[in-house]
Amino acid sequence: MIDIPDNFSMKGDRIHVSSDPNPHLTGRWNGQRTADHIPYHGQTTLGMFDNSLPGGSIGEVNDLMQKFPNTFNDSGLKW
Image 1 (cartoon, rainbow, N blue to C red):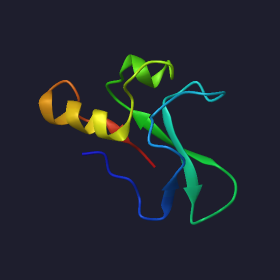
Image 2 (cartoon, helix red, strand yellow):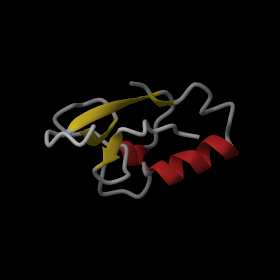
Image 3 (cartoon, one colour):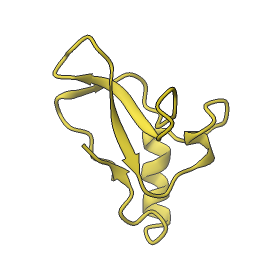
């Protein structure tokens, strides 16, 4: 399961890229107004790189981690 810190409020639930070319989750730390990123490391999906495609949501990645534990071993958010 993807672990999200208690003091991080997500802005959406998709792991994606933006001007930061590495897959990440966007949100706020401790309610700060400035957006911040939590990087995602490990096995990726195409949806993490192309937001017009389905995939890359926290729920979908959690499902993939459960269905394919060997493939998604050591994958997740790192902060």
